[in-house]
Length: 317
Length: 317
Image 1 (cartoon, rainbow over the protein chains, first blue to last red):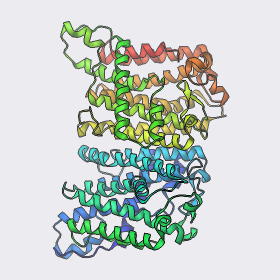
Image 2: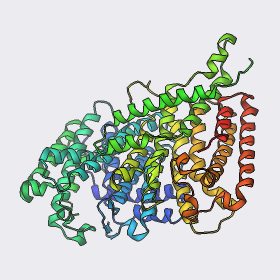
Image 3: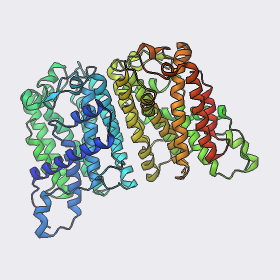
Image 4: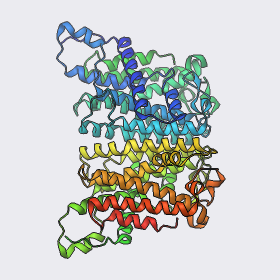
């Protein structure tokens, strides 16, 4: 089987269209009272990059393609078409709901006190603090509920798959909160690169790891394949954070959809502070390269995950 | 088989001792950074009544006893002894962690703004708002994580049981948040008894329902037994809330461990406002009686759940 390059733009458009429709279906399923329902819908839409659901879909696609015996004639088309199962759609929802809850709570006055997110007023500015807190709370609940819920348009999930996804997801959802705490502890302090990495391994890395692994689990990845997925996710998670720190000083508020330069305002430790923009850029690049190597080693040179890594490397926001 | 009365005091002491040790084990497993770990430990201890874990244990005990063939000689002893399996211990933790997260968030300034809880300063007073919010967030995560986590001293849970527990638990955890929203919407408004009941069915009733049903699931309750458990839980959940409203006006702050008369201060609709203390007391009693009847119908006159209902009816806080 000769692999064709993945058409990433095509793949990602399909993933995001599917995700958006599924977000709608899950919120309809939840039928929350207003203004809670409106607040959840508001927070779950907007101009999010949907990186985590894309990681799920590409993790799934990468594992699935590596085991599929695809007819030569169909191969090129298949590689750019969305091929995800309903379990994978559940996992995509789980990571995006969890991520969005963390953003809403992170933006609250008692945390980062941000007014702008994804190009629009933050949830507590658009609604109020109580509604925003409850929206975050219930989005976390929905992130877990979607793993087993009976939702219209979704095939039921097997108990074994649901239990596996929960086992991958929950401890990393916990680590995300640990990372938030470590991040708060580090404010107004000089910390080392090792300490900074420990924060980000939990704060952003854990959920990125969950996303890639859950994609793999949905495609029934073997126990030999999971370590490569983990290695990839850990590298990409860290690279993503280094990039965020770089973009915070090099991009405009308009491009970012959130206030540029906000790290400095909060006196936060960042990679840019520790090593400067140029070294940080080299570091991010080397992390991307290593992450891709882990995937190429197990799944060959052309896969959805390496295409996603290339796309992330190019991002401007 | 002749049933002996359940020694409820004995049973509840064992349940609470087990729960307290298990809370410790789960928080050790989580190994959160401080002050998050301390805040979680602080919130999970104190003088809580542990009603929800008791509902899990008694739900388990009731179903288990109804199918057990117990030796006559051992019977009386067995009925007052703690007989729960490790899945049941997980479910007890899940409901108590979820309940505690909801209390922490409910006490925050943007919600009820309470300073006193379980006889001590609330979490955000003892620590700070950011830590309290994160503690609530991570306690919710742990409530789900415990359903599958590999914790020292716990037998692994079967995938089928974990998936079933998640299916029972998650939608009711969501309804709890819906109930909070409905409760906020009703502040400073005249509402009817039907509207008040709709609030409490979600705000407190859903988790009580989850507790009893999860106990039943852990004891492999049959599909014929589940409706009786649900009926019991719905009656007891409502009765519990009516009692809370009564105690808010009849008990002292010292006894309650939280400010007495706080409902009036917040201008909240309560059963006492709608029907007066005497009628509310009669109403609570009739709910208890009906709840017990549902259990007696399926499980006979002597069971842990009916003993728990009697104990709840007598409570002074």
